[in-house]
Image 1 (tube, rainbow, N blue to C red):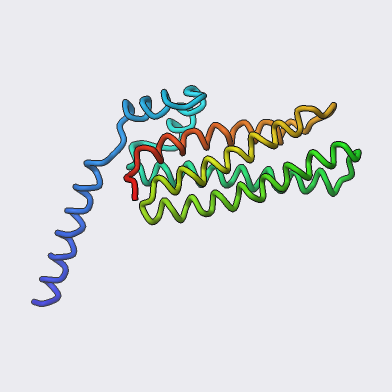
Image 2 (cartoon, one colour; image 1 turned 90 degrees about the vertical axis):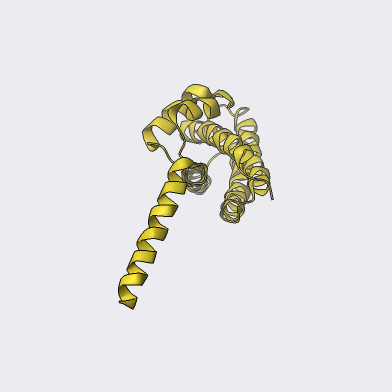
Length: 176
């Protein structure tokens, strides 16, 4: 009998949480609203439409941060490979600067996850903003080079776009 009551209480609690969770689901109209606030709405809509059915803001933020961090880590590894592969001194200096920016960006994204987990939208915003600055600085560093690795440029642009999405979402999260 006690086990039956526990099962019923568990099922009731689960149903209540699902009901509450679904009331916060993001609609396609809200996704459009999010994307309209970014610098690259078409990138945003394509990203969100391929990744999500109708998540809540927390899930949307987490998956966006996951994608951003994956790209940043991929870019960091590519930069290490370029530097280790041997490039001219001027290029090496620019790529080394990018490597430092991405090391910092990855750390900032890790902290953004922590702020998201604690429900601190403002803290997440600050860390994502710092990661975006890192990608932007890297683009500035390499654009003066004669020959630039296309994947570094393309990933840096994508990271800026992903950070833009995360920033809009962070502004919609509660402030602590």
